[in-house]
Image (tube, rainbow, N blue to C red; front, side, top):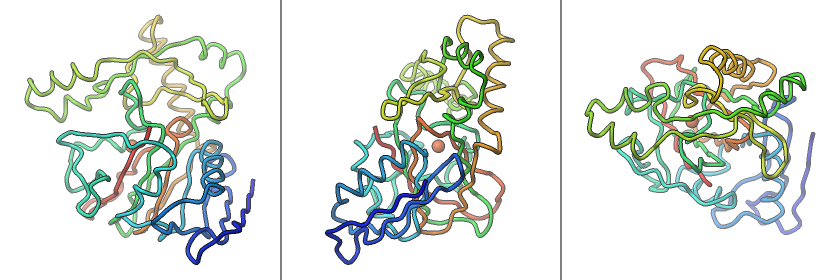
Length: 287
Ligand SMILES: [Fe+2]
């Protein structure tokens, strides 16, 4: 897939030569030749970017397309920002609409385990955008997996069985809360606020009609109505499929890089292969 779009009403900055190219054969789209003017995103460009996002899962922009201060305005054409209020979601200094993912700030970060963002909430964010503010010289990539293609690679009878199952998702499934909140009362309050949720193991994307694996290694507790061993083994098969080289790709960050993804098409994780250097990403999620 290669889509080229030339916008008739270009200004000096905006989308004079927007070019989309596949990132891998099954995952992601590179976006070149476009720079956000800080004011608005032309309707044709919105449509083109949305189609690429829904179908390939991740948009990888040329560095410099947006700034740390304005990327949160740029992505507003995708949806409404989801507010995260909590002690573990500090704001970016130069952009109060952005939260930060900071390797020096939070030693309990669980972003190195495969997940889709916020899936422990009844209404998880459809989209996440990350802007690279400060990154290690080497390492600290983010790896993405296309969980639609991971599902489609299974044989039809197994897909039909998966389609029939429900899974319980819980914020503390792998100790996300237990490891952070040493204060028992605070931990209990968080657990009460974020009760376990039952959702179909396989969900359908509202824009493309394609199915995707909703279970993830960080927040899925178990599959309902089957034995513990069956649950663990099915989840193991799914998590293994999600990690397959054929459906994954790594984004190597550089400062100013900007990536947007659809949490219903891809899962992701940060790669924890750097030590001393600071890795500071700005983030916004949208519903
Ligand atoms: Fe994440």
